[in-house]
Length: 228
Image (cartoon, rainbow, N blue to C red; front, side, top):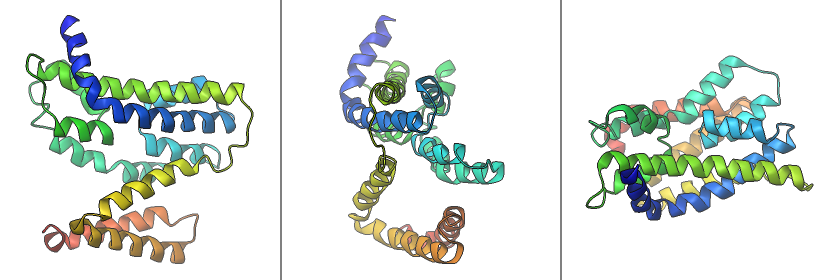
């Protein structure tokens, strides 16, 4: 327990940016769930069990329309497919960490991957406790943010119109940050072109999955030229 506490102190500075982001996004998610008729308990349970921020926002829409299990499965698979590559990249880092590996794999979100893949444990702190601390802190931030949003949604009455745009805004910012790098611009243009084409062909209600499949196919076919 003493070692874990020491590791938490060492990991905390690295997770401060995630703390600020997760509190805002988590709170937005909690308030949206409240606005759709799902109380704080449901929102917190979703964050604790699913722990997949982007898909949780998408799931709000899925929960409020006629349930289509095939569409939900394919959409979840496509939205979270990137975690397969995260997992493969972290095999070496998480090697030999014993019983905590299932938790590390379960909580390997974008932000945890970004921190854990880029930093090494400080001197005197074990790898096991350091990576566990990063994952655990980020997990707690997200759940706590959801809780705050759920409670705020219960106590405050306000128009939540536009609040669901927070996720779209996040992805727009991430996209802009990525295309600032020259090597990512072609991939970004492919994504825009495929999305626009599928939006035109399939309409606003059904374009997401075809667009992601088309993007995946083009990137796989052109991976030798794109990976320069």
